[in-house]
Amino acid sequence: MSFFVRVLIVVLVVMSATAFAQWQLQRLHQKQDARASFVAHNTTKRVRIGNNSLNVEIADTDIERAQGLSRKTSLAENAGMLFVFDTPGFYNFWMYNMNFPIDIIWIDEYQRVIGIVENAPPLKPGEDTILYSPPKPIQYALEVNAGFSARHNITTGQQIEFEQ
Image (cartoon, rainbow, N blue to C red; front, side):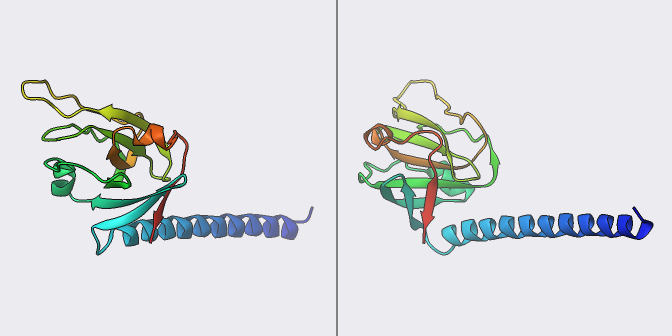
């Protein structure tokens, strides 16, 4: 093989790798833009999980995430709260000041269910705080009424969709 052909092959490989990297970066930015537009300018959105569409309140600040559903007396059947974190991580949840049991659906950065806590009871006076932790890093957590996951066959691996 001549020197010119070898150089041409190297140039083509480098150009292909660069184009692929730019394409991947563009996809990442589009996903981040979609995530940002989902939570921007409104505190209530819709989330689809399986055949279920839920109205969710968005908790995307430290104060909103700490407050969560505490002090609410109930939650409509097709309602919930979506906790949105800036980066994937292991975020603990507790049931302080809760008035009703819930399911916590752990969701990763790819909007896939990676775990579920079913029927987490409210903390009773004098009880030690129980911390609920996801099995893997999460980007989101969805709190719904206790039993919702079982009634609607929510399972790990399911994809979550953010509706505009």
